[in-house]
Every structure is written in structure tokens, then in C-alpha cells.
Image (cartoon, rainbow, N blue to C red; front, side, top):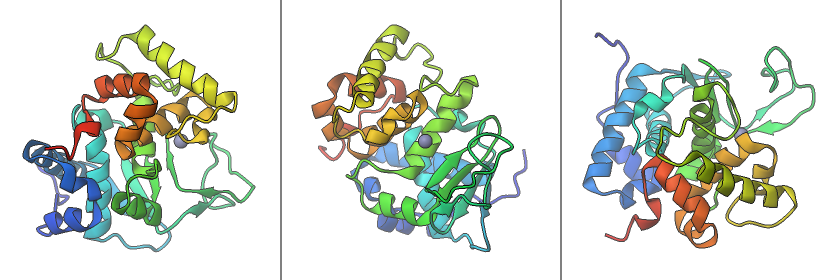
Length: 246
Ligand SMILES: [Zn+2]
């Protein structure tokens, strides 16, 4: 098959070394996987800059590497429904600029949006300043790339409900029990660090927020939410809390 799009640029290793902090925590095998998946994402997905913004290698490589990290244990097929990655320079203000959360609507309030994941073959929209900051400075529990790509994985069964296709990696009832307990606690107003309270919005946001915590603050998640860490570890087939210990 012939692909006209270019994959990783020659400078990709300098870029991940400077821009993607987790790169220095990965072992050789993980690095090779991240390289191959980032290359695939750059070749096979449509990359676009919004609003007169221009894409650079720093931008595409940094985003691709973070998206690849999420599926490092699973493979790029998890992103088969991602048609395009559209990058904004900064938070998108919703008024009159982009489609609202419901297809065919336009939101009329001004709300800063860091990213969006559209369902079916829809694109992922990302704010570059947010994606860049999160890549350089992990440890906050916020990462817009992990968040939006988790939504695309959740959407693979066409039901956006916080339960992606588990493919027997995690027992369904165990998944529901663990996620529901933490979700209901957040909804009741409990503080469940390192989970962001935004996870109480709905089950889909809970899964996206749990994914952010799992990859961005894995040691804290393992410590505070061991059950949730365990189901996420089995689902993503990764154990990020052990990184950096070798
Ligand atoms: Zn979300």
C-alpha cells in the first residue's frame, strides 16, 4: 500500500526527548513500540492545523507520541475510528467557532475547550498549548491527549458510556463494580485524588479522567485507587507505575 504522508521526521528523537517527559521513563522495547506507533499515526491519520495555525514537527510528533503511549500495550487498531487530528494553538472558545457537543448544534456560551473527540469516524481536536504543557510536565493528572484519545477508544462500540470494548482483558462485572464505585463517590462530592472531579460529569468523562490519571500520575492512582489502577492496567496492558524503576 502506498502512503503519501510522511511518518516520523529525522529529528523525532530529539523532539520526544525535549518535549515528552515520559520518553525518559520507557525501556528500549517500549521506545521501539512508541516509535512505530507514532510513525503509523503520522502516516495514516490526517493532521490539520486550525485557524491559520501551522503544524510543525514538534507539534505532530509530541501529540503522536502521547497518543501512542495510551495504546502501547494494545496497538494502533484502537484508533481505527480516528479520522483526523486537528490542532488549535490554544483553548478553543466555543462561541460560533465549532460545533456544539450535540451533532448539528452550535454552543452559544463561551466555554474554553481544551479538546474534543467526535464519535464514529470523527476527528480529535486538541489545544496545542495544553498538549505541550502536559507532555513536558506530567504529574498534574491532566493530559488532554490522553483524555480525548480515551474517548475515541470508548466510542469503538458506538456507545459512549465509559466502558470500551473490554475484549476479555478485564472481567465485565469487575470493571463495572470498580468504575461505578469511584464514579458514584465523585458524584456524591467525595474527593478521590488523583481523579479530577470532572470525572463526575458522566461515565464517559469518568473513563477519560481515569485514563488521564492512569498515565499521568500512575503511582498516585495505584496508591489511592488500587482497584481502579488494576482494571486500567489490565485493560491497557501496561503497568506505568513501575516505570522509571529500572
Ligand atoms: Zn471528555
